[in-house]
Length: 142
Image (cartoon, rainbow, N blue to C red; front, top):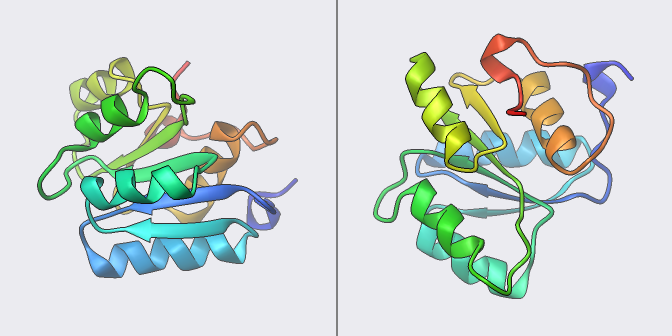
């Protein structure tokens, strides 16, 4: 399946982003590919939303206002909860930052600005759908 035709039909995706423009862009992009998308501007708001609307995957900026994305992951994966896959986005291009994020449970690390096809492929991979292989910047963790 070509990346521009990648289908996320029915996948429940929570986007967590502190910048309204990026939040809206990611929401529109994923919804256009068929995902059911909810959004949160903070990790705290994301946790509240996850209690009533469990997502299949979370896409989060790794530098959130207030609670960090890593704290979000730890709380979302608390005992008794499903381990929802998390795709992290960041402006940090250092290999060590990527390795740290993947080592802390992020299943895919994408550097900003994120290409639309890379975002959709990472989400598809996270929810277990067929997707093309990523470039180095967007390759899922193994």
